[in-house]
Image (tube, rainbow, N blue to C red):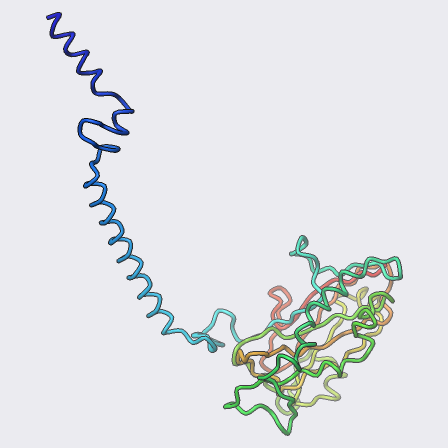
Length: 303
């Protein structure tokens, strides 16, 4: 018995534990496999993953053949965006306040208005480069609109904006007369429809009704409450409170830039939070204050 027990312990010792698993000098195995075994399994996985990569590459190529790089598959009623454009505004609050719609600053030489000016300058950079980068752009008019077969978009005339809302004048922020840029959000293929035969919505401002021209989309701003109306002071629009309809539809043409309107607050009451609502007006633009469709909300406070 004693001899057998000695043989058992010798055999156990010969197994070698983990180090012998790493490399077994008797069988020449590394991690439990011979060199030939490692070669076979390596070749197998190279072929397996190569076939897998080739399969998904072919699937992606076939998938991308079904996509149009210019026109979305689903547009207008068939899309998730829908048929009613929203109204966007600039400048926007800093990213750390991404949910905020407050434009707050202190005017004057020692004020903190520079961020808002720089945000507008950044947004307008592409408009300043239209002449250099605008091979797909041309000047449009009601007499010379874009032909549907023409792969061009209308150039937006930035020079028509009055100096009151220019970068040279700090967009009025230094002087406590801020300019806010308003633009319709892009919806592929959307075209504004004019109101028929004076069938205006009840809330359309009187000054728009009196001067209504079906060739334009109108934009108006007002205080949300009575106190806001009193505090906002007089407003001025540049180049005017309307956008020509020859800028539409948006067709994802290279170089296309959204037309916009500046609204300037000429004498906003200082130190008061002013709630503003701006709306775009066309027959196929509906307004919903809660969902913010067809309109934009922001707050303004000037110290």
